Length: 270
Image (tube, rainbow, N blue to C red; front, side, top):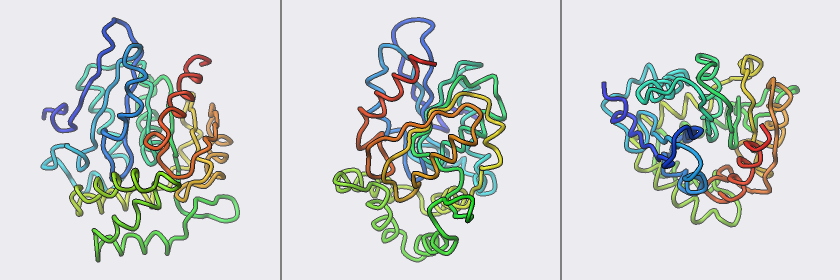
C-alpha cells in the first residue's frame, strides 16, 4: 500500500542537508491543516513531515479498518508507517496535539530508537476522572453522553463540541474551523476515533517513555485541566511542563506564536 497517499503525507524540506526532523500529528476530528500556524517558523531550520490519520483529513478512507482504529495502537501504527515510508530511522521530534500525545508515546515505546523528543500540546493520558488520585476532567456519564449525542445528531454534536474545544475569545474563528473539520469527517470513522480517544487510559505507559517530553498545558482547558499537565510531569521520566496562558484546547491554532516560542526554547536547551 502507498502509505504516502494513504496518510496524505506532505514533507516541507528546509533546503539544506542534515536538518532536524519535526513530525506533526493532529488531534481527534482535526487534520494536518491545523499546524499551518507552526510550520512557517521552522521552514529554514527543520525538515517537517505532516500527515492525516486514516479516517481523518484527506487520508484514503478506503483504508479505514474499524477494528484496527478502535484502539490508539492503530493510530500509533500510522505514525510508524509514515516514518518507514519516508525511510526515517531516527531523530524524530514528534509534535502531537491532544490524543496524539498518547499516540506518540505509544509509538515511542514501540520504536524508542526512532524518536528523539516529544512535544505534547494539550495532552491527556486519560480524559476520565479516577478520584482521588487522578482528575481527567470528565465522569464516564459525561463522555458517554457526548458519544450518544454523536450517534443521535452528528451535526449537533459538532456544533456543541467545537466551541468547547476552542474556548476563550477566539472561540468563533477556531471553533468554526473545528466544527467544519468535524462535519467533513465521516461520522462512522469519527465515532470510532472518538471512542478510542475519550475512553483511552495511557497512565500506565508513562513510566516507559524514555524520551524527553515537553508538556504544553493550556491554563484554562475544558478538556484537560491543569492537574493533568502536572500529573504528566510527575509521571514521565523526563517531562518538562510549561503552562501557556491560553483558554481552550488548541494553542497551536489560537496562539501559535506561544507554541513556537516554547518549542524553540526547549530545542535550544535540550
